[in-house]
Length: 123
Image (cartoon, rainbow, N blue to C red; front, side):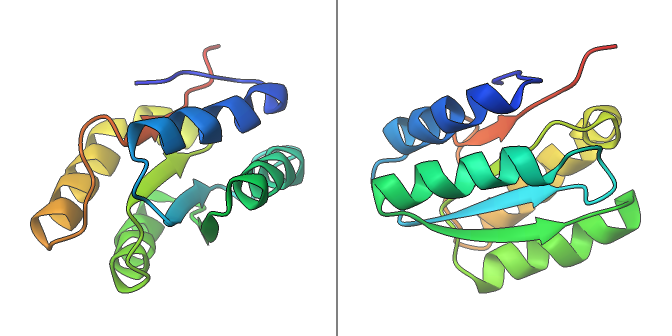
């Protein structure tokens, strides 16, 4: 699990994810649009992905009710790894997120425990 709370580390997280799953050409990003200043880390992730030649698929989740839809979309988009941006909701629901990632993996979506990067914001 990679933990991070600053936007400046987002590019490094994309690089690490790319190193862990070098065959991945499409990466999913889970973001909470209600998180303060979410656009800043998203822009950094997009820039880092572009430099590495990766395709990003961003899914937004405001509540745990949005998780199933987001992960189903990741499956349809054939992402090979998922980056979860920092958010208190994602930290408190990390077990649900990990379970959904495992379900995606069982549906022929390559997500290893190492390619699931969870970021948390510690109080």
